[in-house]
Length: 252
Image (cartoon, rainbow, N blue to C red; front, side, top):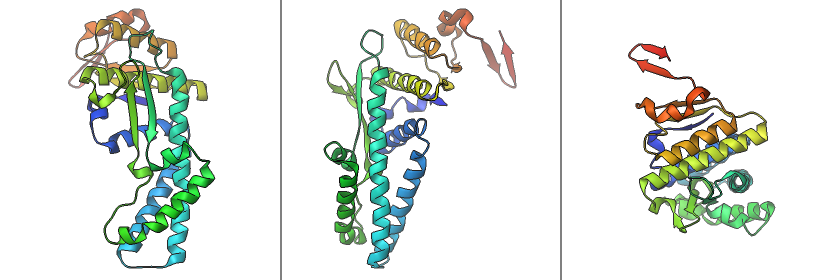
């Protein structure tokens, strides 16, 4: 499933942790192993932190945890970067009503992967972890995939998404999510279910029409909600309409 809700409208201006979770959710949809890698990394990181802050200095134990962290960190960063590259093919090209955007995963490991093979990045990150043991034992925090961010930019204006208006941010988010739906359909040969809550309320007419065309072109089963039936009328016979009242759902 691919979904958008009103609470996500401020994704680009909110904290990096929200964008990172969003990015990983997009990766999960095309790489089933990604969730397990993130869990293994987080588990090893928490265990390592606990050992360091309780004064346990077992080098063999710490080394094993750091090897696991490094191996999974490189794989996590590579999967995030790979998703960004794959999405490029499906992002708006400027001929549609949605903005042309560029995106990438940005973080310590992702930057290293841009100029070095994964095995070299594993070794470098493992050395980085070994070198931060004292600082982390004293309360510091280690850098890594848990601090990465999703960077989205308007190509035409060269402006980062967080600097754009709320309306433009929503348009960028829709462009990103619909591109991801196309990618999932291409990779799995089966379109995802789209759950789009209050998706059309703040779009102008041209963008609403463009969104409906994309949904129909993807061929996905899509559930769209809103409070104004008129915004969905352009879908015509391509959609079924339901009215939801307290304790009742009425079909049109």
